[in-house]
Length: 185
Image (cartoon, rainbow, N blue to C red):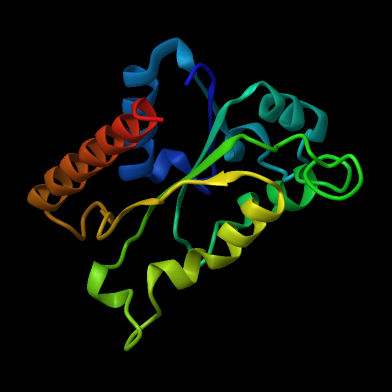
């Protein structure tokens, strides 16, 4: 794929270990093929520049939504971005075919362990991602199998250095899987 757009929707990348490292690895591994838009840095006041975001989407062949699962959902800034940017006449409705044929990959992390995401506890990851999948398909994206990494929480002075090393290793492995998935499109 020639043009890869990564939409980073972590609510505070300065306090992230996993998502920040994933973005760094994607930037390094994909080089000039990738453009990364860090929503929390671009729009700390949530005033999304719709024209700029739609233009970035138009130039992309593949869109990667990179975010942590936050309260079993997307972070608020990603929901706001979707509401403001995927508009009638652009993403759906009359003339709303601008995203048709583009591929969408959800690349997400969780603080909780994989076992939490089951029918018996909080629901399966597929269930949590169903609204995103439905929205993507409605906007005429080609939905790609999501990339999910669990137990990616590190809190300084709470977790150990071994925990930090584990989160970092998992984040690098996550980014490598995303890069491999994109290379095989």
